Image 1 (cartoon, rainbow, N blue to C red):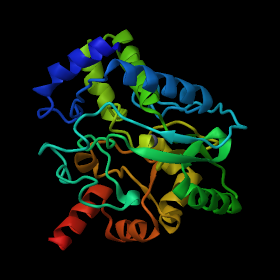
Image 2: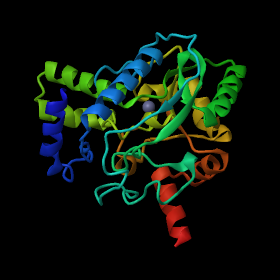
Image 3: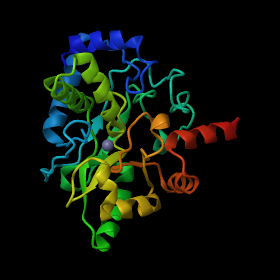
Image 4: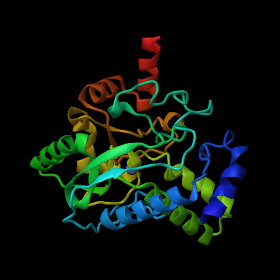
Length: 294
Ligand SMILES: [Zn+2]
């Protein structure tokens, strides 16, 4: 979608956003010319340097397996196009009123359809395997988790990690295009896409704290993934390393995202244990923390 079309869609969906599960808070985009050019140059470089595959499960239903390697560690300052700084409205999920202002811990930052990546969010990236990058603060935990998973004779495979804003936009637009080729109107295609691919600016992948991990022998990004040995192990053990299955099967009304038995989010060991023990999702966990602090 061109920027002009994107802006038009955002204006159009402003009135619709409270009526539909899949339509997320539109972003106000107003980049001054120079900043825009600089940002485009930055993300263009990043897209070239950082390969990243999609979990565009909604249409294609299959993750790509080709990765590049040999990339150097880079430091990135990622600015989003959002102007609301991660504020939220009262629509939908229980945690819609929560945001980074509620919980200051970096590992608990909430990004979902109602809480955008904060403006001027900065992430220091560290190299993970297969040419992927993550926030350097969770890189060791990720490496340990994958190593221990492999020690059990399993074959976990990272198929998506850190994403730039532009890359998230590309994923979104490509999915819209595929749906329109199947006969959807643009509005329908955008609505459907938002159910499975976060609207740019609202993806945890932009934090560097989220990963899509699959079984190398079954890289299909659909619910069948939960039956793989790798997912069974990760669902059972990821909390030990500080990761949670971010979008559980019964929490879509709270998270705003479909069940994704491949998307893991780093929240730190203690939070991951509590979230796991309580059987809650991140939104519910943060809401409880907020209530406890009141
Ligand atoms: Zn993901």
